Amino acid sequence: MSAVLDHVIASIGQASGAHAEAARARVAGAGAPMLERLAARLAGAQHTSRPRGERRVICVVLADHAAGDPGIVLGADHPTIVAARAIADGSAALAHLARAAHTPIVMVDAGARERTHVPSIAVAVDAVHAVAQLEAGIALAVSLAEGDPPLAAIALGALGVGSELASAAVLGAVTGVAPTGLGDPEAEAAGARAAAQRPASALDLAGPDAGVLVGLILGAASMNVAVVLDGHVTGTAALIAAQLAPAATGYLVAAHRGNFTMPRALAHLGIEPVFDLGLGHGEGAGGAMILPLVDQVASLVRE
Image (cartoon, rainbow, N blue to C red):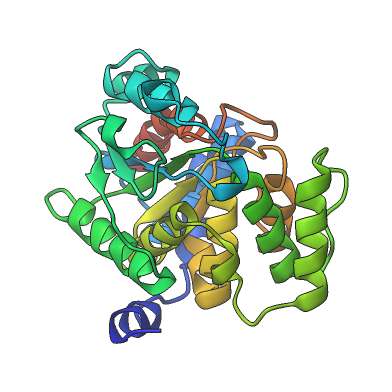
């Protein structure tokens, strides 16, 4: 690993169970179990019985995996580019939800195939090695946390093709169980191979998107900032982050149960989602949907 990574991991303490329970009790009178779950996760991560919600950010990481390479140059018509441009020009569902939640979007290009067509608003991360990807994510988390009032939460999302194989492989490697019923034979086979081999670290099986997201999770957790997950790539990152720093699990908020490998990732991590269904496509829209609830929780605990 690296000195930076070792320091950050060592800085991650257990989320506060006492503060989580106090915040849950404060909102229990609202009769909304999902608000109780959210209040507990936020309070535990922030180490306060009155969790803050006034400043947060949505971070979307772009990366295309070799498994999804179409074999031809698509240029501006590449699916990742089309989706990224829709977010940048404000027409995507995520952009609408972010505006409604008064939350900025930060886009990170960690390896989009058609890089010359990535929107200019994207922050480029040219990190080939896994440790460099982690450090880039940590640096980004620190940068996003700067300012006043303190950052309450970072909502994560991912865009890119071909991430399914990596997600299944990481799930198999971490749990030791071959994933079945995913509806993708190649991904299931990748998961079965990883489950049989049980590598010491699942990080090498993930793509650059997950690498940067893992760094974001670790960096945020080291600063007592909650992290909102959305979709199987963020679930993949959460599994690896927990493998590197088990205490990081306490800083994670699952916006929804999701699909593909996400439900099993959450089950392994022991995280109950705010919504018990799948929302969005993992690009951050599902996470953005719960941000207004963060405001409600913050208001309720102040009453």
